[in-house]
Length: 240
Image 1 (cartoon, one colour):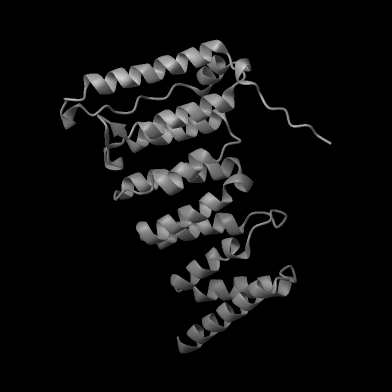
Image 2: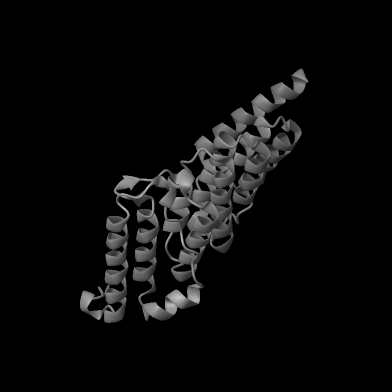
């Protein structure tokens, strides 16, 4: 049986601990010194350095460093004791930070989570597209890890950006994942729903028919859903 070894806090490099103590002290000093400043003095995100630099100063504690950097990013929208609207954030730099932190710790799904669940709460289409772009880049690197965030990106494109063609392209990337990769049927079937909403009935009919005839689908709920969707599409085609 494999024994899980927990890393003792005393094993964390001293210089890394000192670095972040100084980092947070600097944050406190900054907030205190600017407590009376006007909104015009809002501090912008810094440009992230290369991932190799952060790995070099972590001395093997890449995961810890990535979490601390993410914490620093999340604390950035709290300045002068007040929560700063995400609309103030430079989403181009935010995207760079999320992708850089993923390079430091690829096993973490948190950068993609922040892109889809946290920083997507902004009423700015350009910023939203940057978050969708982050999710797509992370998905390409590790589809198994990020397929769920990809489905959320599809919903962002559909509901918040009202861009059904772009949502369809995302759904196609999900549905084209290897069959060996276990996904819930609703994730793969997002493409069918979007084809239907885009009135691409012929394409949807061909796709559903091929799925049913392949014999690969055995789940009763999914078979019921596909047959119901196929009937709906056939009725639409007959009306047209």
